[in-house]
Amino acid sequence: MSALRTTAFQTVRRPDHQKGAALSIRLSVILSDDLNRDIDRVAGTAANKSEVFRKALQLYLAACDGQSRGLKLGLFEPSAQRLQTEITGL
Image (tube, rainbow, N blue to C red):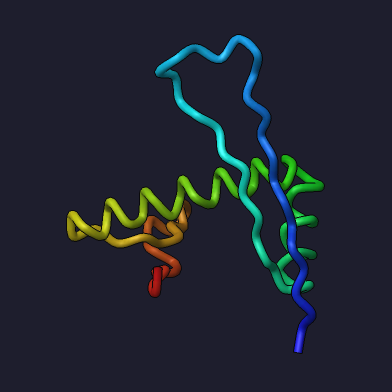
């Protein structure tokens, strides 16, 4: 069994934050060591952990929106012009 690790993300509200503008939140997440290592690996090559989570949430929300419109999420192979993998269970 993998140990769990809590990872905290904090975004501080800027002093020039205008009333009515979008608010920032602080989020704490409990991750398995395996998942934390995978996120570290991806974050080390292209972004930081916060950016990885933001992109993952954007993808998840887009998948949920598409699913509500009858669409599916998958990995497309451009050279063969075909769907390589359908992603299910979101």
